[in-house]
Length: 503
Image (tube, rainbow, N blue to C red; front, side):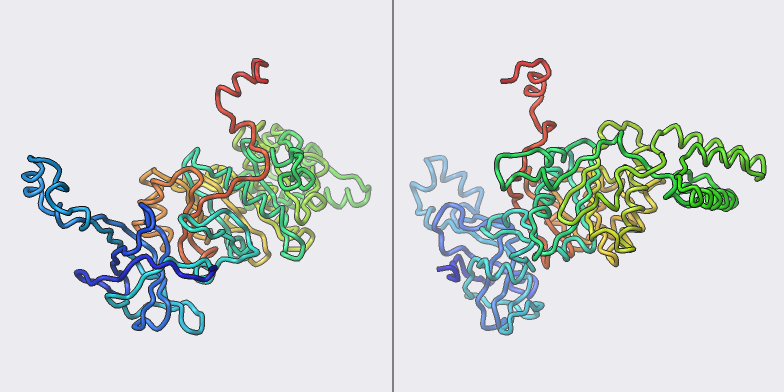
């Protein structure tokens, strides 16, 4: 039966427990060799608690009274296995430690536990219905996979997940890009009646371009909903840029220089309005050269603008037109793998996020999710061209339904201002002690036990904490539907393909 609870054990009296914050249980129902696992959710039926108490298993121990004394075991084992002398196998039992999450009151609400369960209370595995209620899962939400050790889909509510931004953090090779691909697939599969958003991906290494590959399977073909813009074809429209935009590209500009530049841009826009022709960076540089500003101010500004022109990023018009390109239910991937210069990439990110945010504030594009790979390159703790606008969206984006998903393998290098605003965090395996320390300090939802578990997660396993869920959960990421990118192939396969020997 769907709602039948599976009995697994009984609460016991132990030193200093049970309490409202922890209790122990002995496993009494063993149908297989592993009846319970660390991290599973259990339910306690207790009259004292006035409702069903929900808890997480924090530790599991095996014990046997015949093996408690090392000296005795050593002596008895001299003449053969101890089990041939005593019925030791009958005295082996499993103990578990658990931490209460809350109690489901008769009204159906999850409330704080203020009184412990009693010794002798029966313990059950939490049912899927209980977990949906307790964890704040949404059956029509974004499906990332299955709850670890439970056959329960982890379906996260769209608003709770994205409105206050997301961080995906893990070491290289732990599955960040795979998880992000699953996330993108879920957004592209949503139906209009479920609520859809536009998806923008800043792809540093070309890891998501396979989403645009046509497939024979309807379920896995996202090619008609995905557009890839190659880095060399990205062009920043000079007529759209203000003096403050240019100042963000060149942090050395003073207020006086910004003011003088603003006069020149205003004059150029007036001329362009009369002729109907846009202007580019060369014309702007020409106007600066003809201006009557202070010679030293002019010389410095000319040098900066010649430097910007050398990037070959600026033109008469914006390409692609973001207002036309960003569409609800579709993904736009900016593939920057051919761009080597970090400065050029930061300028592109600055321009894209600034333009998207302004378009969104005016209601000219749909609500969007901006996914930024290698986020520590673009919003580090130190200075960066793109850092300011990312911090602005992190603080203000939720008011305009402009959401960030920042992906990084080095959270310790991320701006603490930005990190503090990413209210939903998804951690895959992390082992660096400095990163772990930062996570422990920045997220009150991650305790020491969770930090210890993060270091041992397998590829494809993740811990989700924060606004997206009501309680930290471990999830086994589902298989992706779209083709895997070529860069995920083995070294042997890539080598064979290069030599033309692959079948």
